[in-house]
Amino acid sequence: MSFIRRLVQMLVGNPNSGGNSGDVGIYHYIKLKRTGRVVKVRVNRNNDLTQEDEGSGFFATKVVAFSYDRAEVTFHYDSNKRLVNSEIEGGTLVDEDAYEEDQAAHAAS
Image (cartoon, rainbow, N blue to C red; front, side, top):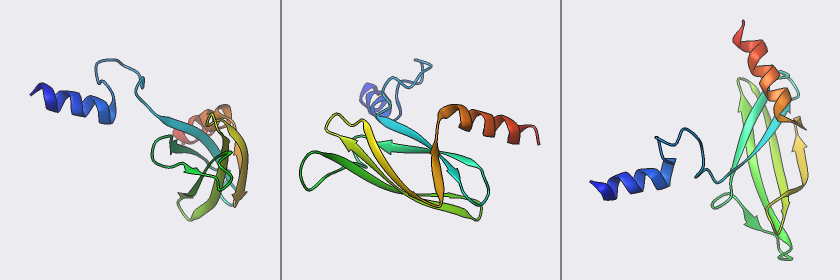
């Protein structure tokens, strides 16, 4: 039974810790052009990143969708997996505060 418990902890984190200490995600927030909604995008550091041809960093491509709105995003990271640049068609990169405001505004309706 302890093997299964350890496997679950590796995959989803420790449910008793109350946090995401094992989360390997990099989070970005995209404001979609047509609807104006802000969507949280998760990039997995271990699975979603592809090394650039020059070997100088990484990139990840995502399609973000909400209702009938969508954006295509390519994130570029340095060798330490910090965001350097983003190319977004159909939206704009915003901060977490904009996401929280969007969530609060739409939770009341």
